[in-house]
Length: 240
Image 1 (cartoon, rainbow, N blue to C red):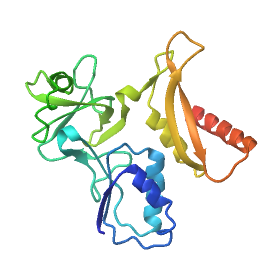
Image 2: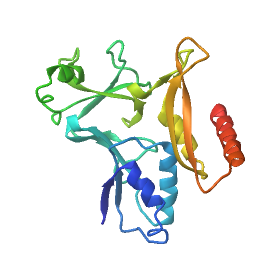
Image 3: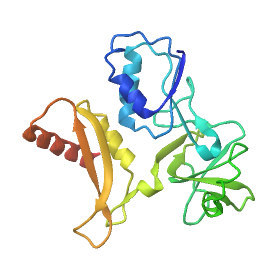
Image 4: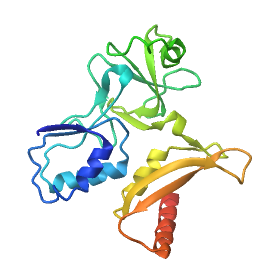
């Protein structure tokens, strides 16, 4: 195959596959990823894998929703930035808004990703309340799809997704933690096979949550080795 459209889980399996460990993959022009956000750690491992296996072009990440008939933006060939899901496709408009004010935020600032264009759905079938929550008319008179995702756009028009609004962890002091950022930092370690960050209630304060990290390490490890590695990860995340 010259072009493969996949998911982060598929790419993770590809990197760890014994069948392709020594294979020349230069025939693969496009390796695209969508359906879920890819953390920076997995992307870094993929780029290292890609260079070792002769793949010419970097990862082609995209971003979209079923409500938008698939992709709203994408990277392809040399049009690529690390960690980005690309630039808006033709006739599609993306803006980043402040969920509280409904106003567009400046470039580089995080807000909710909203999309407008001819590919958006008409409605959810026989579900007017759900439709009204997702499809909203803005001050410009256009109807926009509210994605429920946090993201930002840089000065070149590249879009970056930082996580789901519902998945964001708010600490007792109001500081916002995006799990995908922590997962990317930790997954970049060679000794980490899998990682997930979830929010749990902070029992030491009257409000807020703190991130709980669940890590699967490579190989068989004893309890002391696991504790030592977890301590290293804690220090690493604290410093970064």
